[in-house]
Length: 140
Image (cartoon, rainbow, N blue to C red; front, top):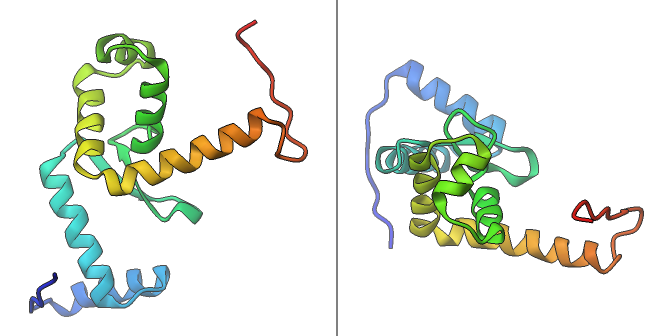
């Protein structure tokens, strides 16, 4: 369910909102709702930020890094190790990795489909089903 909220914006704020809406191909109302949602998530998870990422759209990242939340979670799960070890390996603080995992647990509807899609591509690649792709095993 959703609620209608009326807010008063200054002219320059509305102009900025309209520019963002035009750039992203959405209405000012939809854009405002997205911006509010991101601000609420940022309040709850201060180490997470959102960036436009081409075809993926808006993507959650660990603040100040190139670590996408969904990709970080996928790699962490694949490594089958503990938070401390993985954080040291990646050169980030333990609390940063814990924040990523907390965010992913809070928003599985955002994170899990991205992981599932990556796993599907990984499976196709390992079976040689992606034309022109050559898989190199660096473990041997």
